[in-house]
Length: 375
Image (cartoon, rainbow, N blue to C red; front, side, top):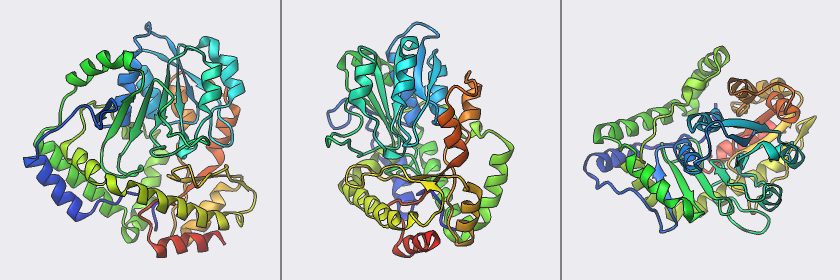
């Protein structure tokens, strides 16, 4: 069973990670002189950015309804309240809904889901003078139609390099501060973050390797049914802990070491997506968001299908996990005050969307298997 996420973490990655954890020199703080801070998760960076805004308690922060639990939770932890904005079938903010709700908002989080860019120019025009945080957890190296990197137009940007993201490194995130007026607050916040102990850092490498083993296709076939039963029984909010730390030394070292290969990984994902798009048209009664394979990072390929369950079963028989992503976003939102009916398009997407794996660690044989399943 080919998993939908890229969880590869080799034995060599594990050995090197443990060595870095136990004897490596810790180096934290500014990264590449662009006011970027290395943290343990993107959610940590998001909470820091929200707190840096220093808004009054219970201020309202706009956020796309189709989203991750951690984004909603970060707003709550920062002492604010989320206002949910609907999204279109292309997984970007619905600008009409944003326009209708903007007067309630003190700040806005723009999530570039699946590496698909929102129109930041139009959003900035609607939300004039409002602080904006770009959530690029899915959008590392994605560009907009003007060839500008996502994460450069908001006051802050966050990125994720967590296992299963792009790039898939380990538990890690980046907070980029574009508006330098917030730097003093972020500096203080960052100084106060705990660091991983050497032992916990080493153990995190072992955990990443274990996760990688469980996602080997011949093992994952047996793990997937257990995983699905577990997810069906709960909202899975416990999956998303909120322990805030600086980035582990092992993750930081690997992140820096693999930088020369990121553009190669990007090209592989874009090529994989082009190939898969040639076959997706064979899926009956489905909608495919516009995918600019020259500019988007093609982290995952989302589709919207009326016959979702039938498609999942068809792919499973071919040995491919094609599955929903953030399908419980409406239930998560209700934990933070969302009222059903306020974001109808997001509610519809939550019932119909699927993602197809296109990540850079797919082998030629795996890509062929996915293409064949689409025919």
